[in-house]
Picture (cartoon, rainbow, N blue to C red):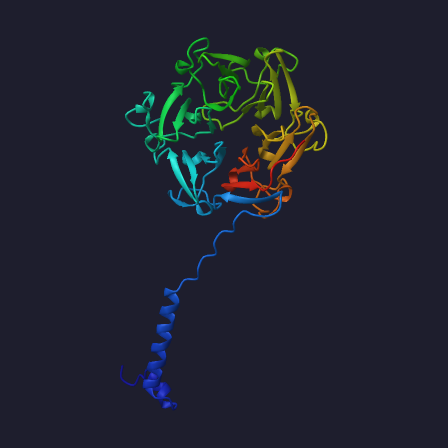
Length: 410
């Protein structure tokens, strides 16, 4: 434009030549481009290490979602994980509940072994209904809840919203249905494969080649014996409520989430004496069933949702939506006290209860500090690795966290 001077021209009129200004601008531009091309290296996630009792994340970056497979364990997304399973040889799998997948920690990477991008019930060709089964990554799932290592090296998958139990062979990667068809209640006295379940939540081995099933919407516990025959052994079919302490197991009532589309609830475990333990979620209790003696009793929880009672007797303590229960290497029963944001431990002989992880705050905090002072957010699951270390499924934090050090004696 006539009469308009450029910045260089104005600067030159003050004593600096235009060519100096041009050279300076070029140098600044080159430096800016170089800065854009050079990214600050990301700080690698801190490995899980520390003194005994230290808690730290071992799987998950805290982000809800699915970011593909093959990513480092600490950089992978999970979406409301619900269980972690550890094989006797140390292999570890996560039930990535809202991603509808079973994922294995393969070295430092996380990989899907069962499940796909499609919400469903098996492969499109239904080949998992045959003994040969289907490739695991072609088997569509709908919110699986548990994976249990079996004595033959396979793993039993509780396909909760598919109303089935599926067997996964980690050697071949194939999956087939072993129990269940459509939702319902049928089959007692016959072969388990033809029985109907209604959102089975969890299973537990009986130590004799059989299996207990927490049949959630049917409000009962069922048993498959070593011959493959199924029977109901505790609870009143569709009769949710609270009853049965001091009565026979088939007269008892439990309260697991029900309705057309309930959340998962309840769990089952078995001790060395063959007694059955039930996480009676909506009754906020842990119940014990002795089938040999035909008795039912509450061993933890008053029935009122809340928190309290540590150091005292379990029946006088308060729980809030107890979920997974499992026995630790010290013989205590560990409880995912979900809505108290804590992990509790119950001595099943003395009935003394205590908190072992979680400060009750529904958030994420405390990694690399004492587990009892860390914050958990609705932890549903708890398991133990081959070293006897506790693995906490910190569900709403989308992480698996480890407590360093073998759990000691009672």
